[in-house]
Image 1 (cartoon, helix red, strand yellow):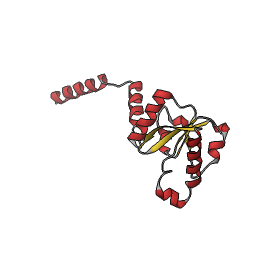
Image 2: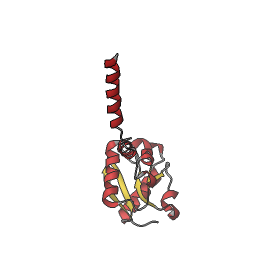
Image 3: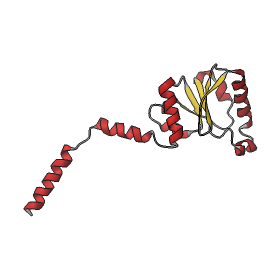
Image 4: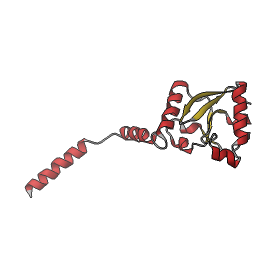
Length: 146
């Protein structure tokens, strides 16, 4: 019995001496949270943000973005074929990252046709610029707000 009490005391002392600070735990949690969703997309978004910073809101249907530390506050939901969102200057929309615009299924259903055509026209005019692609999804910066 004496051996058991001494053993428990040693374990308790070890546990109490290995207490992590709140900041260490929060930092670990933030790093884990950055990996939710699709890692390749998250890494590309974080890399762009580190290098350039977002100039305004990111219109996207990648809903995971709203939960990503440091960049979630830039998330603005894109809903199917919502062209008015690109033209609303009050929203401070500066970037587009719309998953699925090039999928045949979306185009066959018709909801992406107008949006895709509008974005393609703006890219051709030089008003929008593709910054990078992640998993085939272009990240576009609006050079001028309509």
